[in-house]
Image (cartoon, rainbow, N blue to C red; front, side):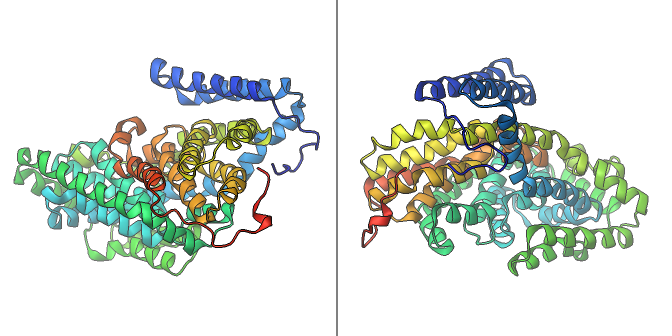
Length: 479
């Protein structure tokens, strides 16, 4: 374990059974509170922080060290916080500038209801490959698809599941993705070697996901009950309240171009917001005060009753304020994860477990499930990727496996499970941005379930199981 700045060098790790008791306590708090009491996740995380802090204290650690360990995780996630704020702002800006209303308007013209799910899947996939962020894709293109799908009569959980599947597919094949870069870095893998390895399991999973959404679109036919007059009314309402024109799509085009040129996500998003501001002032004839207020409060401040009730909620969202619940939950979860990581609770469990693993298939399966458990306990894919990447490198080397197999397995477990857990940063963000509960859309996020299962099955069958051609003594690193 790496020493965290500000923590004394005499950190005391818990013994094996103490670590098990601590983890069982956290799981009990989480599952009893979320699934039985159905209470606020924020309060549950607060109790979990107290529980883990007490366990770290009884393991022999001082209060000051526990506090620093808690804060260290939050400090490392500052870039995540900035993205939280910027995505909330860009959603509001894209609505007020007419970008998202125009996407909905044109989508109602060019997307066929029968093929809406697969068309939306492809659109989200292409955009996330281009801009390298599942969050940015879901908050812009995904939000527009929520509006279009609502107009066609599809249930919101199905649409949200499609958006999540498409957004995370492209995110994993994009060299601009932060989690893709982090997975390669944490395992010592070349970035493009990692992406090629990821494609072996991701492309078959995507093909199955595409087929499932295609069949679902044919079987589930809500558009049969939607009259053409309703669609025309929605389009008329959009055109009446917004200046619908191809020019309003410029902000999203700029964001894609900047991302393709490998400009940082923060800069590309800020440039898109500025262009949306200009379009909002000129094309939509907004007052400066109204626009600035909308960036904080959301688009509700600009257009009241802008369209039919089917998509009215979509056009009254975004803003900094809409991200605050997710923001506060993220801070609590990161504090919990910081204590668990700093004081080695997960490391203690893994140390004994990894010595018993002799088969590659078992190792990959344990890697994936450890990342999922890490997300459940620590609430952040970044922490799971870094911790499991460090802990498992020696085990993969001992079985003569290339590091890209480890990086692929970490992505399959950490990244794909993160949007399916309500209290992770991804789950909290997506539920806020899309307006759909994580527990509602998780069953429809087919890709996020299928990819890890295919990765495990392929490994047991010896498919895409890359082995090193030569073995060096330096590969045998103690876990």
